[in-house]
Length: 170
Image (cartoon, rainbow, N blue to C red; front, side):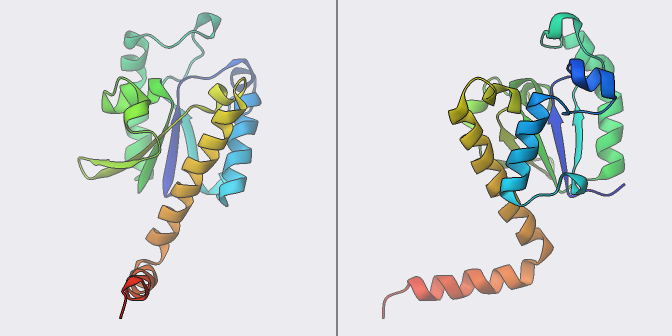
């Protein structure tokens, strides 16, 4: 499988457990809407979670659960070889990059060990706070622009150059 982007969430919920696919419940519909608004087709990205089994009571996965699933996740990333990994929420961010709070890097594309990451909110956070939905959409719109630049770097470099020339005053 080849995908330019992998989205990594926290853990399967009840709907995901029943369907055997990530992000098919309410949070999945929010993610789908944000992807669509950004012009990103879900079929063109790979979506997974830090842990592969639903924790009891839908609690945040514990460190030993994350560690147990990490080799499987690392293998998924290795096989897909994405250009960008989008970390959905604090659990994904802390598990992959060791960050404590997404606030410091939310919406930014950062590079670690040659891999680019976009850190954004988990779609489930937008279920109860509509303002967060806008933030997710904004972050995925930035991701979409980054993908387009990756697809045609020469054209984008020329356009950036032309834009820079237009910004200069004579």
